[in-house]
Amino acid sequence: MVKPTPDPFYSTKLGSAFLGDSLHLMSALPERSVNLVITSPPYALHFKKEYGNANQDAYIAWFLPFAEQVNRILVDDGSFVIDIGGAWTPGHPTRSLYHFELLLRLCRDLRFYLAQEFYWYNPAKLPSPAEWVTVRKIRVKDAVECIWWLSKTPHPKANNRNVLTEYSPDMLRIIRKGYKAKVRPSGHIITNKFKDRGGAIPPNILIFGNNDATGSYMAQCKEAGRIPHPARFPIQLPTFFIRFLTEPGDLVLDPFAGSNTTGEAAEREERRWLAYELERRYLEDSRFRFALPASQPIDLSRRHGELNSSSQEPSLFGPA
Image 1 (cartoon, rainbow, N blue to C red):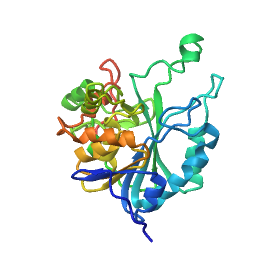
Image 2 (spheres, one colour):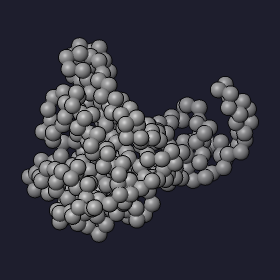
Image 3 (cartoon, rainbow, N blue to C red):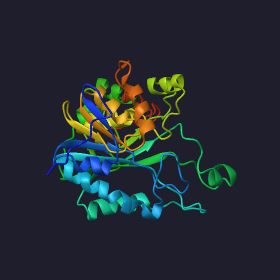
Image 4 (tube, rainbow, N blue to C red):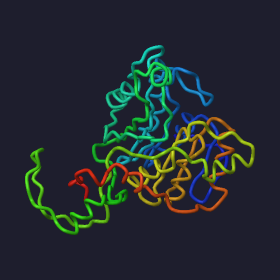
C-alpha cells in the first residue's frame, strides 16, 4: 500500500521539493515509478561536516536501507547514479575502502548491476588532505570522485548520442582528410571510414569545475545574506546523466537534494523531478535556483574537450 506524502515544500512547472527524511518519503512512492535516481549522499568523512555524515564504519549500514528503497521505486530499465567521494584512514596517508565496499554490497546484497564506473575530476579542487599533500608532501592532491552508475537489469535505458562532445582538432582533420587503414599496436583494426556523426562519444572521466561563484544560486544567496550549501556538485554533472539515461518527461529523484542542483538540471532538461532534503535551510535557499529564468543551456562539451590535446594522437574510437 502506498503511503500518503506530505505537501511539497515548493513546486515548479515540472517538479516538487519535499522537506523530510528521504527514507520515509521514498517509501511513499509506488514501485517502479522513477526512471533515474541521482544523488551525492553525505560522505563518510573522518571530520564531522556541518551538513552531516556517517562515520566510515557505520556508513554502509546507514546507506543500504536507502538503496533498498531506490531498488523498489526504479523502473526496470532505470538507473541509480551515486556521486561518492573517498576518504582517508584517520591519522594515516592511506585510503579508506568504504566506497568500494559499499559498491560490492549494493551489487551482491541488493542485486544492482554495475553498468559503468565514472570518475569526476574537479580541476578546481584544493590540495588535500593538507597533512600529506602540503605539509609532509608525500601524496598528491585528491581531485577525483567516484561515480557508480548502477541498474536493476543489465540493460538500462541509455543513449550516448545525447551526450556527444566536440571533436578534437585532430579528429576533425581525420574526418575531413580520411585515415590510412591499419592495425594499431593494441591489435584493433582501424578502417578509413570516419564520418561526422555530430560529435565524439565522451569518456567515463567527467571534467567539471565546481566553481559556480557567479551563478544565480550563489548570487541570490549572497544578496539574501544566506550561507550556501557547502557541498554542491556542478550542474553539468546531473545534466550529463539526465541527458544520457532519461528522456523528456521521465521522472528524476534526488533523495539527498541539498541545494537541489539535480532539480534545476531536470527542470532545464524538461524532466519531471522530486527532491528530498532533511535540512530546512538548504531547501529554503534552493528556491533561488528557480526564481529566475534559465540563462542558457548547459554546455557539456567544452570540459570534455580538455581531455584531448592537439599534440596527442587522436582517439580513433571517438565518433559515435
